[in-house]
Length: 141
Image (cartoon, rainbow, N blue to C red; front, side, top):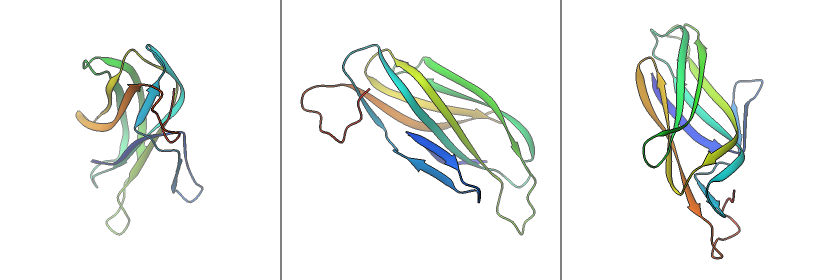
């Protein structure tokens, strides 16, 4: 099992033919003050499975604050089908919409994914206080 993709974006979904469609990928947020609240964002992760993996697997995703404490926890499961050698390995797309996420202060927040007893490093989200020098391309809370 390996993580093939992990990011945050405005919207994500799978298409009818199994492709992943994402919009508005970001790694930084700017807040006018703290605590700050992000109304909506989507956590996306792609896992490619070993050939011997099949069945239902529980997972836990933590958003860890700059001090190392969990700020948010998501739990769920994913089903993995068996794949013969003449087909690509099984892949799981975890698409988790998040609403009203609170950031207690500035710093680097990190996502971790725990599945099959293994912890995988997810994306980092850098949260900064906003100031007058922020450009129009920066994402504000």
